[in-house]
Length: 403
Image 1 (cartoon, rainbow, N blue to C red):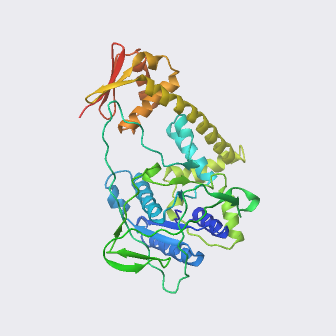
Image 2: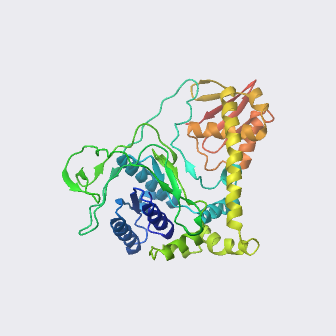
Image 3: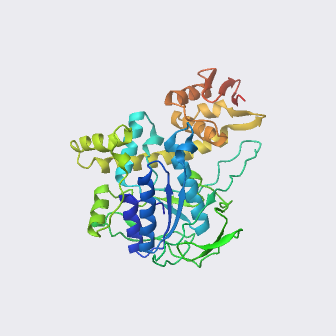
């Protein structure tokens, strides 16, 4: 489970332990707020010791790693890569995060303000499985493997509580009633199998917080599972069980159990759009509809259902339209694409872009619409961001990427 030390993740951790669920905690110190970041790390470590939860911590200089790139995206990549490693070591089938209904509402609003379509309106997924990669083009191409990242188990705190190291099973979790006030949400209770040994390495033996022995040499390298990779590079499925729970419920639960938590001072800075949405826009919208958070989360649910239908149709369309490739040229049958609903053709192009690993950062709605125009042979050719060219040639459409 990802635990930052904030109210949401602390509440979920306490709820899971109250349900008797074995939990392996992963915490990332992004080193962006100096002593405050270090204080978060210390708080999480001590909370885990008190609750008897196994804890792994990574300290990463995210600002240096970003080096001109998007800081938020870099921080997210670092977190989820770390979660993948911890999940692999623990044998966990589930990576749990504590996003709430308020996070969902803020995400939907943020995307609306920036401009989004049906895909963006889905917001944060309640569950995201570790899915296999999209099918390779015709003929089959070649792929590469990710390199493992170093993982350091946090040593057991002097005088801290002993914990039991129990690995998660790969079976679906058993859900039990939540301790949150009002009965909103459900608690996740995976059933433990027999513990599995840690991978062997070299170096000095130390004990982690669970008392289990690991071999380390400054930093241990654990290889992620080669079987499959899901969202954010995580081998395990990602679950967000609090997406139906409001922040008010979370804070009420913490108050009832008298549990402190950490507050990120940057969350109050309204220079950031997301913080303005949280502190200014959402309170204003609640004057029109006090239950606006639920309204926005329901919108995300409906968008998810509609997107699933379109995505299924788009995958079938792409499979029927694709013709054998020639070198770096992807070939699609124009008649097959033109015969499909416009939204499905647009979604099929998105699937092709995703599969090929072509940049989608600057692909606006208008750009996808131009692609549909070429696919339907209403326009002869169009160039797209990332050096992608699309041309209607006879009865087919050719897509190439300039090197």
